Image 1 (cartoon, rainbow, N blue to C red):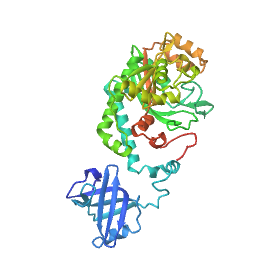
Image 2: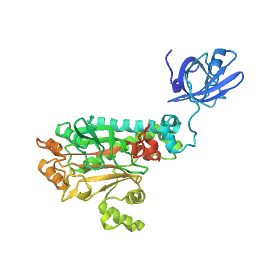
Image 3: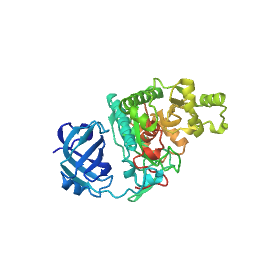
Image 4: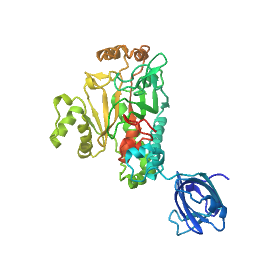
Length: 428
């Protein structure tokens, strides 16, 4: 018969259920098994004298073994899990588990060594249910706004941002790199007349960072859109997309997330507040006495970024904050400039930068001059070709899906990545 997910078993009917054993109590005449799948748990009560062949199969069976059980599901008010239990007349052991290599109190490195076991924890499963809902909602929002989904190559012939922090590898008889972002190819799509595209795909950064928010491989959600008038159009799209996605996530998993992680999901109001970088430093000094040397005020320091959480709540009553007007030396060469100021932004959520976005420079001569200014002329020669034959004004941004999930659950990035990759972690 067809398998039933536990959340969909039918009362007073015969059902087939498959899953992991969470707990087993094997008594003299009865055995009680809690079986779980991705939708829930079900108590399975075995009458050993009535079904000796089942009793024989479960002898010595440990938790985390995988079983298939068939039989009627009945109501039982004494059963805590939804007042239901199965009385099986058939049971198959699909896989016998050995004793687990770690306990519930294992440290994070041990848990990552045995990640496939660690992920069986309900809280860990919730992380990826939430992440799925979040990316689904962002994809829905993009599709509803005339975006196409594309998939850009991750093996590329030139560094996609500058030349540092890239993984270099041998590609037959030449060098290649793992893409730091789909930036160049997103813009090629604009030059192709696609107008609006998005991509959800891996991103690689060769950064030797040992923080709770950095990874050498993560998932990016990237947007690029044509015929914009200003980077404000890009910011508007991002704030609307995030508001939609967080609203959908709260609707489906908000209560579970708060119960599991103690983190309340707050659906943001529109528009998100905006502040210039120089004004941000002035506010931090006036409000909190926070200062940095003038030489560091041309970018957001880690501490200033962190303090944006408090500032945004106190000044604007908001969790999000757009920071604009960064100096050209700290922005990519392809950002459009107006009066020398790059037309871009960082988006901070809960004191963590989640996005860099901008209007791009689409005029070939200006773009080439800005690349030459940063000494990148030859390195980006193939990229500059995209703009020789006409290209509409455009802009976009990239979001780190893992970082979003980290902020939703209030966990370090190691715990929200399916398999974390960092300077010291390349397995499993």
